[in-house]
Image 1 (cartoon, rainbow, N blue to C red):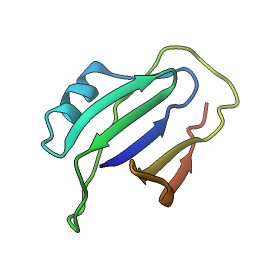
Image 2 (cartoon, one colour):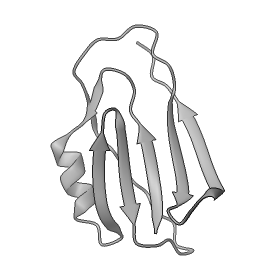
Image 3 (cartoon, rainbow, N blue to C red):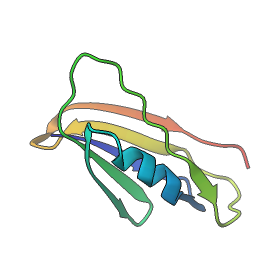
Length: 91
């Protein structure tokens, strides 16, 4: 099983429509939202390219946003191969 861990920017939440669209994909096994982190559990990955789009909604205006991060790792070997990415949005 593979986990995509998305740390949301401060003041943002994932929309319910975005969650519904992700849950309807056959590769997605489960989605959890804890605090400001979205965990997307995938059954497995193969050599096919996959694109995941999360629609976010700003609920609180926050100044000086810090970059958010995205991590992809194997559930059974979290210390093994990891892919990380950070990005931010101007306020």
